Image (cartoon, rainbow over all chains, first blue to last red; front, side, top):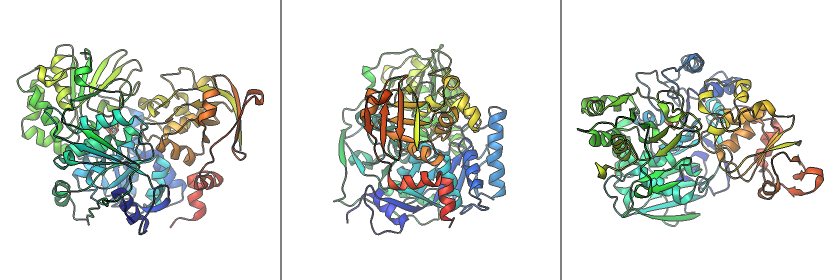
Length: 419
Length: 164
Ligand code: SF4
């Protein structure tokens, strides 16, 4: 029976020859992930099950990133709960600040996810790992607690929507714009309960960093997972990072899709998501030059090396506008180190940016850049819901890092072409 | 299982940041989470819930983050059930896992208003509005999910079947 890449990975983990959309299956999990917000609840569930051991101490990843370095006493207690659990159960992949960064940045970087894996994470952006040709999806803490105990979970096989990108992207257009465009077409529940498969000639040349950005935001269309077929670019990234067996699945030519959506990128401009929804997308030229109080470059969407490099390219020899604050947060210590070595951090500092330690930062309005009432921000993150980054009357626009850096210089929403 | 109460009506795409803003996620106990349920968009929501009250919402309820804190806050505040046109998938799983009853009904949501009184019989699969003026058939819960509910949530379901 012909299958999509998502169906093949699910079948392989269910011990079945084939699976069909709609079927409920029991699957083996290769990696279970939780963070400092979701782990404490998952740990509670784990103990309620009466288990003594995690299913595999190498297959659980616990990453402090949301409120770490601890923002207050309560969050310090949560981080401590996770730390003590990790020590007690000798969790191999637990990371302290200094080694830790944003979960969805460091797990691929450290080679903890490889093509063909099935990953369950107590974080909605777990779908990021689809960039590697893995099946990865977000769940709540109870589901995750059960996975930590049993190494298994149940899934309903999703139908797949295929996105076919065609054409060559112009200047200042990257993975963020490709996914924002798709969100504008699909809507925030346009792929609900479904798989999103990214394909087409444009995708073939995209770097891993750009692919991570795209898979990351599959959840913003309500999708269960977002996935790329692994190719040489994937292998070049994943093989040196892990000695585990890597299985590169691909969709059969006659696989069945629920829908195919074609996206022409030849004429695609940088895209902006307007408040208060990631599907409220307009091309940059159709967006008002809104004055900005803050610009944030970072997060599991756009806190990687290429993103910082793009920002530094814009900021070189320029400064952030007087009434605007620019916050830049590298997604991991490795990225931070490389950015220091390549002079990127110096360029950003000279331009007037403040650099934060690798973590989620203001992305979820917890700390390190929370917005005041009525403030407007442009952010390279993935969500601009009401109150996501602070006060409920603040407003968030989403863009790619080049546009974000240019807007920081302009003090208002605008593109690099205007500089 | 029956739920009956006054309606709190919400629109489409109610995300988990609205249900429980992230700044309140530095704790995970039900009571503190409940106190801040819908804190930003409906100040006083948590303090004014009557026994059995029901949330009725549009499409894609619970979209956004995976935080289980969202259904926990809703349950903790005393809401007996959420009726929506549709639910985001992580919220859907989470609600069943922690034992918060949720049902989908496009037609019912359209006619129910804030402050209405509704009653739902999950076993019979019916939803009735004030004074039985209108009644709707609600979408059946998938058999597998029913087993989880019958067991009393995912933890008990897994325990009953035995850990591998
Ligand atoms: S960077 Fe933002 S979206 Fe990504 S894991 Fe952290 S809080 Fe979630």
